Amino acid sequence: MTLKTRLMTAAAAIAVTAPIATASTAFAAGFALKEQSVSGQGTAYAGVTAGGNGDASSMFYNPATMGLVTGIEAVQTATGVIVKSKVDSASATRAQRLGGTAISGNASPGDIAQDAIVPAGYFVYSIDDDLKVGLSANGPWGLVTDYGDSWIGRYHGIRSDLRTYNFVPTVSYRINPMIIIGGGVQIQYAKAKLSQSSDFGASRLGRPGALDVKSDVTGDDWGWGVSLGALIEPVKGTRIGIGYRSAVKHSLTGNISFTGLPASLAGALPSQAANADLITPEIASIGLYHEVNDRWAVMADVQWTNWSRFKELRVNIANPALNSLTEEHWKDTWYYALGTSYKVTDKLTLRGGIAFDKGAVDVEYRTPRIPEQNRYWLSVGAGYQVTDSLRVDAAYSHVFVPKASVNLTDDLTGAEAGRGNLTAEYKSSIDLIGLQAKFTF
Image: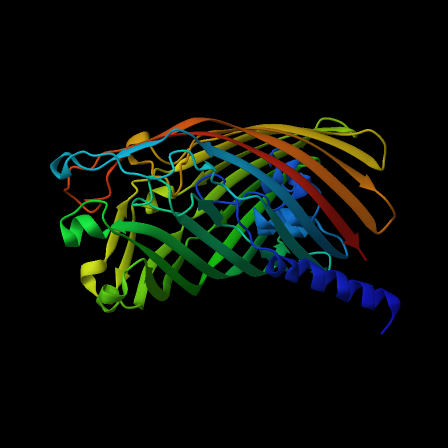
């Protein structure tokens, strides 16, 4: 095996296996992770659907952009996600029919989000000038929020943990000098853990607050979907990209376990089978890339996400009396981004971008598991051609998140009866620091 072959094989292996090494968990739009391209992050992902970022990482958003790759290319990204979502001075009371008494516990759990590193990897091989094949590995959906077992909203949720791993074999083909099409198959693994407490004293003993029982539900599943796209270049230097990623359906199967019961009652709630359905929403996007001159380019992206699929969070237990239901009522969302890039020299490119990311849930349905809100992006980035075969990109984004509130009322009717009234306010922000390497052969 020649040195070139060994390097190419190593780069491909790193690119498609790195997402296995680090969990993809972040507080993002809904539970979507946009952090799949550092070169794209520099423009707040404006133009990525049209391949405006200039490397194979755009195939996550539009598989047809693989057709812009020449030769063999491997891209590895890593984005540090620094999340703050702070809760102070929340309040919780029992339903009026249970006396309306205050629920004891920690009213200020502080930062309930979790920082993470989100990696992604891409590999593209050119069979000829028109036909390309590739493979990508990503974590497109993820979330972790954790309030601690003693917080006053524990009956609504304690820990929410979702992690996904996506592997997408992809092919693109240039039909004519103007049009490229592409498609791939999403092979997705998902695993989740949900924790919360129940007021066992109120429901079983007639003494509200006398006994809390914590439940932990875990489950996982494999699912599949498709990724499709087209790239149109009506004139040289101007491209329009259209991308689509389908929904992926999961039936997460696992078990539920209980803690907090005294020994005399332990047999009443044994560990048992549990399952929950999860559908990651489909995403459609359109992107524009236009070269104003040989140094300066402008770009835009619009993305639609079908969050209205997320109507409820239902957990089915072997003992149906223990089934859990949380109503969500999410809405479809839109993401709008504008960006620009400027080639300072033939080796150095600077980028900038802004974006608006619409929240998916109205305040009356917002829950502490995912305290969702609008987001405003401001991004900068740079790329440098280190050698003929190595390019390095870096990016920084600050995501401004307005204050969000949770206001849940318990009248002892409906699916969430007995969880109590809860009021909480969230002060949140997100910082993203990305680093990317592109290898060409």
